[in-house]
Image 1 (cartoon, rainbow, N blue to C red):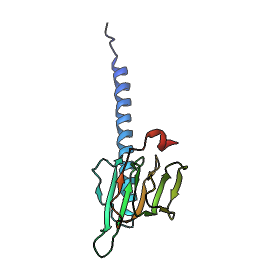
Image 2 (tube, rainbow, N blue to C red):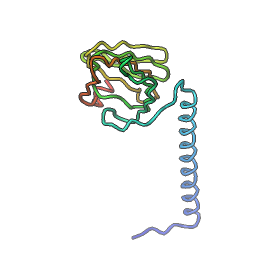
Image 3 (cartoon, rainbow, N blue to C red):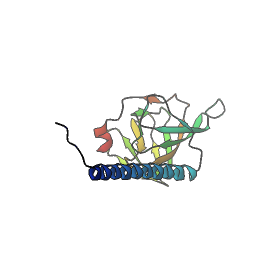
Length: 166
């Protein structure tokens, strides 16, 4: 049998629903404001959302220098949203990462994960399986300097949640 609510009960329920709605709207506005503030302080533009399947979560790429016949090195600014990361991969000629903002991770196969912060740098040896990306609750921005003279990036398996959180 359906319960019949009094006008007072309905008024209280309505007020609670309105308060929850207002709180949710404020949280969404605050989160958008935080994202906007992060994007405003970036050194380079955030770039375009990466739509291939070599990343978990949302990541953005702004190419700064494309490799060509005169210089086989590419430079890209990569912005990872919290929790976003690459697949395991390797670079035949190696890679250098320069962290420009946020908190992220870097891990080579068989080694412990490293925590990276603004100002850190990583030298990824040639043909070494690794992954990198943002921490679960913080954006991560890096300049990826990649040698292309020995071939393109070789993409491997996705980083499991267990590997990521370990």
